[in-house]
Length: 621
Image (cartoon, rainbow, N blue to C red; front, side):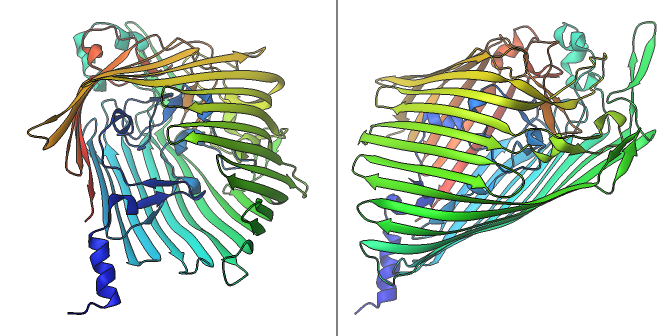
């Protein structure tokens, strides 16, 4: 029987090797679907699906993270909404992945949570034809938590599509993302000595008093994004001219809601009543709301020469509308109800890929009233498949995020209208990825650094306002990562050293952050199962960690309490059966017999011992 072209294509798809299942980013960085079980995959088995080294999670799944590694912070030159601490699980446009698959592919993540809930991330990718791929994904989490008023309930919906003409003349990647994050906000525990003591009654964490019993915050977002390119000449040639366009529209909504304003601390003989966030314009039912809309367009033209590389020129248009219900007067200060602007930039890029070298240089500068600038050079030298070196330099002048400039609240202290200078970042990075060692170096000079701080230091209150540090900050980070193997035994170690030179403590990080895993790996049951079991230790030195403020959804500088100098030991037993990875983890086992001195922030303990189970399942033919 003679087979049709369609039948031959279907038969080939059924026999497709795993290398045909590709995942790629907006920058065209491509990876292959990987179902192996490694220590790196264990590190990525979490709500964010990323290695969390350098981050310290709050006690409930779905809460925010404290950053231990400042080099992980990313900045856009354009003014964003702010509320960065609330964006812990938010997927930006650059976080979305696109798929190219010969047959349907599924990726299902499941993990138990602290109490009453679960965490699930499910994705299905299909191709309607060789050149059209679609994926649908939803990440959902609900966890009640161990402390009072600590509920987390989140959802991330993603729909992607990609198309490439058979000739390659036109390509498009597009996605829609709808995201929502609801968190109970308890403001931390009121009496740290009850947590640190040995009274058995407080082993039930719900007996620890918190500042806020009925407050919550909400962040919602909807985004429509597409990036497409059209080659002007009909056939691919030595010289090509390509039209480029990128579009991003996003709407965000933030709300802080608190029914009961006052907190009462009951002592042995007296009691004290106060408002955690100071005086307010109302005696109950705080409901602070704002919306943020941004519209981004980038139009460009690209000249490509197969020998010399690619040269692009582009114009960017960034419009934003940051909106409160209306203008208001606080004391003698007029607080406007909105910020809006239209910012235009012009820029160019040169990209070179030839032999062992590839690199890109980008320069952009605004030509409207709000000034910003970005100059970045990145180069990679590849020795072979196992060894490469990366060098990067960036000089950036960034407009302040909106919540530094304008904020409104029913709380008197949380109303402001400011004028701040641009933040300036001057950063040099070097990275060595070799078969023996992974190492990176970052040196940064920061000017006009923006931060939040409570400068009034009233006991039991958070009176946080934005500030700008007029002097320079010098930052150094050195990170080393190495995995050793001997037969069935493995040892993976990661160490980060950070040093900050500043006249005032506004950028605070631990000097040393460390992670070490000792594990055993082998095939069992006549190679039907691959097993990896062992223990991981995380540790960081003491430092004045930033605390979290739920009204702003931001971390703020404090210098009253240090946290750190406590190890966290996790024991794991993981296995792989065909295309399924199974995880069984006993988290923070040393909390069963150690001191209660472990904190995620100055007012919130780190999580206690818990056993968690889950899996990641990939299905494809």
